[in-house]
Length: 426
Ligand code: UGA
Image (cartoon, rainbow, N blue to C red; front, top):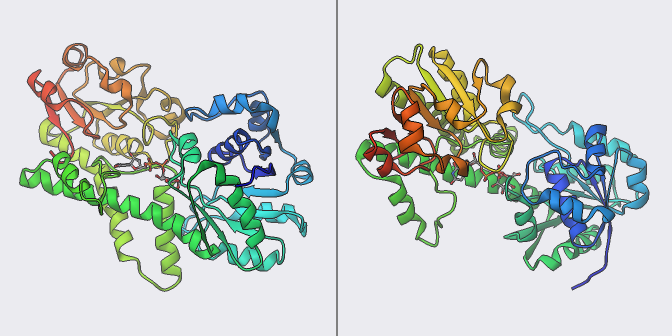
């Protein structure tokens, strides 16, 4: 094991870049975080973290001496030797990843050959090979991230595995990158670059497939009278299946799964292969997001003029990320059916305001449920579990109907108190 300290540059201090920068600083390295957004850099330099990620502000404050934030690429290149690229690669209209920000970074680097590139951004398989052709002899490593929003710091510090992909000629750089992670004690898997790129996309696609699968089992269980919670528990006890990512719900979202599943499908298509399974996985998820409408109609008939409260806007708890969140789809569909929608989220509602159409943003869950004909629990924020459902909530609602989109609430207690309860797959 080596405890040599590196001078690291992180290009792009969005969610992935900032977690990476802060964690490397925590491991004792000197880190230059570079971003093109001056306001972000200024607030980080003041020690203020502009995103909601547990544990991250503490890490940034604690390691302030080793963390330098700048908009200046020249300053970063002057100090850092290993350059982690963590700019975003959002989906383009075609579904392919948009690599324009990666291209800009490459342009800024010019023909500098002093800097080895470490790709953290999720890129299509083959990207590394083409970058290496353009920057021959400078060192290139693919080091995908497997962080989950809401537990990213813990995921970085205690990874299941670290993937370090390098081709011929870059093995010395790959050794240095691998050494950075040695203190974490995780298995470090060395692969070629294309395989490392594929591991990232295939892992996200597999997890999304696992969720879409259990969601379909849930839907069939509703028809056949089985309970998906019991089914998932029984399946998960099989070592080969495992219990994780078998929580049925109202669909997966976020900034990663939708983009990466689509990107892998598209990438396969571009190579002439029709990835049939992923096409279905995506479609199942779209339908799952909309199924709630039918559950509401089953009890309320037409939704015209009905008051529907959505609890939770973020795509999952412990994040303010609303990208591809089910709440946005539901809000639109409900209003399309003529319902009046009110929403509450502990951190994400204001951010989502413009995307929720005419939905009313509430200051509290209790305000949202006041006079409601139905409540849909969209995001399993812990505070929703602590509400006084059978007292305060029920007395405020016009009709005690709950669609529990995450199987999160105490069904028995709610039913006993007179609620009509609809879960997922029960
Ligand atoms: C996901 C992966 O889990 C990370 O490993 C990966 O690094 C990351 O994408 C990325 O590519 O950057 P994340 O999007 O933060 O992480 O969130 P997850 O916790 O994976 O949840 C994704 C979605 O699946 C959420 O909408 C969640 O509600 C849903 N989900 C998750 C379920 O519906 N059921 C489950 O059992 C698990």
